[in-house]
Image (cartoon, rainbow, N blue to C red):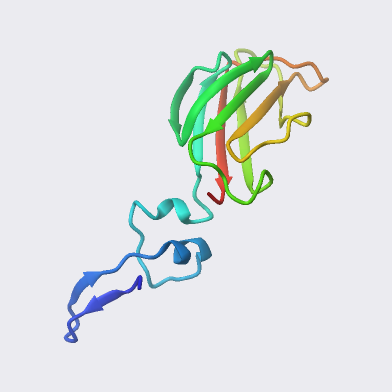
Length: 143
């Protein structure tokens, strides 16, 4: 499966899409990808959101909600859970600030990420939680 089928004379008669397993191994160069299987490739973002510090989400994918969980804290709730436990995915966060001050962004070290939620801390780089204006969040991993 996953290969092009022909009629024997060099004409393609049916295109068979890559299976989920073929997408997850990401090694074949002879299969094609359909939109419904793209999310299984390990190099594809599994979720993203840009959200205000108030928790109000903007553009998002695979995010069920965003919550302002305190000054300098934002929780992103994923629609589809990540598989393999809480350490099976990577989250990348970029803060957007209203001024030129620096922000240190980190996944909370007091709350372990779950397969369905990630708590993000925004600090002023000296340890004080401080809201960013907006957070840009992307997650990669197996679902």
